[in-house]
Image (cartoon, rainbow, N blue to C red; front, side, top):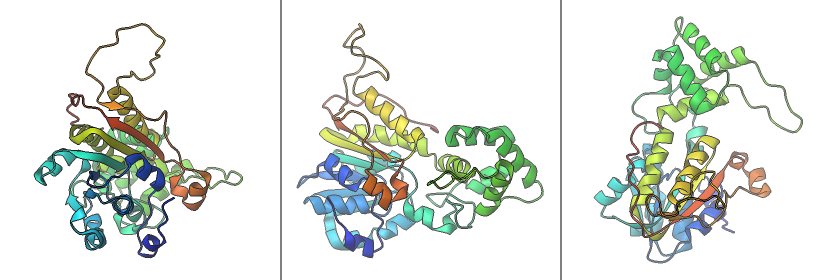
Length: 334
């Protein structure tokens, strides 16, 4: 068990499934690992403390780059931080002088720091600007809500939020924005609550706010999170050495489905196929990954009680073979 009271005191958020991630990555002295979603640096710190290795961290958020300073002081040249998207990891690492690594870890989605900072606009728990941009540049959530057509908005909310009432929400947004553009998180959340109503409280459970799925959808769209994940998985495939470990933590079904399908496909198994069915064995590229465990690892009761945000997390691991990386463009939105 990895204990990190000093990290908590230093204000660093400990990520979910920390012990399981470090165990799956299996750090060894002299090896090089990529933390593609640096965030608060919890995974990176734990790996650097576990072995005399080198971690190259990547993050698109300028605030995360600034948060890396304590690790630079603590670990010196064993730690490198690169600003950019983890979907571009192959190019970023090549530019930094690394063409192959021993492990890649990814923690998909928004970080605790981003959620907790109202001015970033990721959450409606505290009022803030309707922003949601991880890189603090480009199209914001307010741009999407105030300029997209009703059908396009409904499709985003349905596809990325899995919200069945997406058309009602989109129609209400388009109607209300003619009087006043949506600029604050509370404004949008309030509209959705007014349209959909509050769900009934269940005994022993906190009711989910009706705006939750819509905010998730906007965040995923604004940051192209699913497209980024697909590119990141292929980037990891390209840079991992034989026996290199790919470790991915996801937080909702859309992400986990992409990770699962990628690992299943790259291991040479068709999703939903049965080993009992007849068919050719050597069809298509050779497997670029091996699956060491069946299914996803989930957090235990203790961790879920300590950190409610961990409840939906899933950990999947695959090990790189010596086969060439499969061909795939990975371009475009997810």
